[in-house]
Image: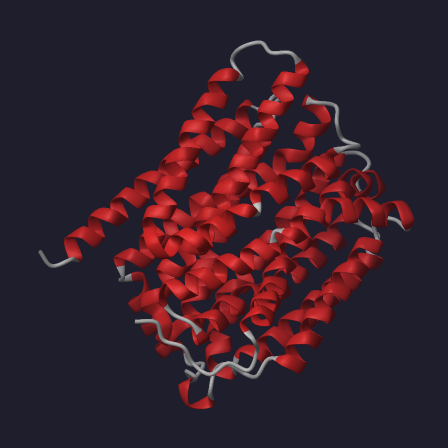
Amino acid sequence: MIEKRKKALPQGEFIALIAMMFATIAFSIDAMLPALPEIGASLSPDDINQAQLIISSFVLGMGVGTFFTGPLSDAFGRKPVIFVGSGLYCLGALASFFSQSLETILISRLLMGLGAAGPRVVAIAIVRDLYVGRDMARIISLAMMIFTLVPAFAPLLGSGIIAVSSWRGIFVAFAVFSLITVLWMSIRLEEPLPRDKRRPFRLPQLMGALREMVSHPTVRLSIMAQTFCMSMLFTVIIMVQPVYDVVFARSESFPFWFMMVALMAGTASLLNASLVGRIGMRRMVTWALGVQILISTGVFALTQLSFGEPTSFYIFVFWQTSVFFMVGLTLGNLNAIAMEPMGHIAGMAASVMGALSTVAAAVIAAPIGLLFDGTIIPMVGGVLATAGLAFIVMLWMGRVEAAATPA
């Protein structure tokens, strides 16, 4: 039975607002990609590759911040935590704008990541406050479908900002984006967590909630699967620009190809929203991972053969699209699977899931990125390995659910 609580926003506007909150992360990462060579040349001319740490520092800050934002939102309400997080995010963006060294900008990006954890985690908790079950999965999927438009255009937007101003102008765009989101939410969205349902911010109660969550087998397995799926996404994002630049000599057209791939892959969330009610969340994730294993195995085998550059490039674009498409079919469902039994501690559950999966995925993806050798083999091989691990986890989840179902 689907439970709905009173909502102040029409569903369409609610989905758009949630998508805007989700998009803060994608915009903060993808718009930076075209700027990394220029930032490296400006702040780290002796080792331009160190500019990639700008992505890693943001992800690290986001992962750490994710641990706290959920419990804080359970104690003080959803909107106040988003306001504070957005303030930290804008402060970090301002500090990044004025940074004169790579070390300073890394610290500033860490602060941005801490702040971005607010809308990232609390947006999921807000959906859980207002929806449950497969309806919740559909709402998240539709929000993610809209949010994919942001990463699709973010590299192109970043390139345009660099052309008009410099790489510093990107951080102004980040602050403006966050301020628009907060203003919209403050005016249109009523606080979704009533005072009588809030949990005091006390360590014993938080530890009790944490023990309850990690003791649930489906939640544990969902976190593991999310980790591997996110590591696939991070692996591609970290290595995609060097591949376009070094392997295929297409650095100038990279933003356009990235946009095309992201737009095509964005239809995955629409497909998921239309099928998840009939197929179920776990099966959708399992099937998507199985298809990805087949595609990545084929592409990995083809990379061992000799193809002309145009042929190999289009094979890579197809494979990149398949990875992004797989992400659209998995992450929303995995979030919904784990959140379903944790509605009474939604903020805490969202925090632990987001923190563990994000930090662990970054730890997995970073070494894979360092293996870049001028070919696509490390990228494809890394995605294939993590897809296989995620598939095993989902089969395990199926066995757990079958064992828990009465005969």
